Amino acid sequence: ARDVRAAHAELAGRPGVDPDRLLYYGESLGAAVALDLAVERPPAGLVLRSPFASLADTARVHYPFVPAWLLRDRFDSVGRVRSLSAPLLVVVGENDDIVPAQTSRRLYALAAEPKRLVVVPGANHNDRALLDGDELIAAVVAFARDVAGR
Image (cartoon, rainbow, N blue to C red; front, side, top):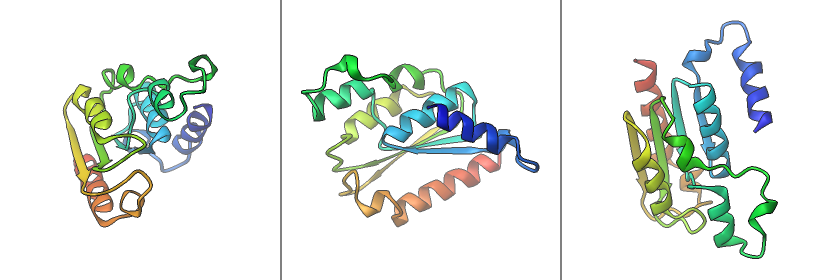
């Protein structure tokens, strides 16, 4: 999380960069990091691809042998999303077996408007459709255009 704050400070401090017009994008664990940053330093818009509710919950499902106390960062996205003031786009894969779509939908439901949800049919967590697929790209571009027009 410190790395993303340092990257933000570097980018926002560059000549010609308006920090109020930045769009943040995070995938999976990176979605939690981007959400944390967005609550602390609100962007023009936030894109979360396959966001989870909390790292502890996700780890408990996929790595039940790892004690929760070992997780230094909890990344409680459910708690953070309620404080989000930026426009939000959530993109999920219909068949995501790492971060199930219903988990991302739960997070989406807790966010304030304006927000959008895009479910990519048949897509799993690491499928190409969720990396650089046409539906993902189109949703992000449309969202960025709308946010830029505000």
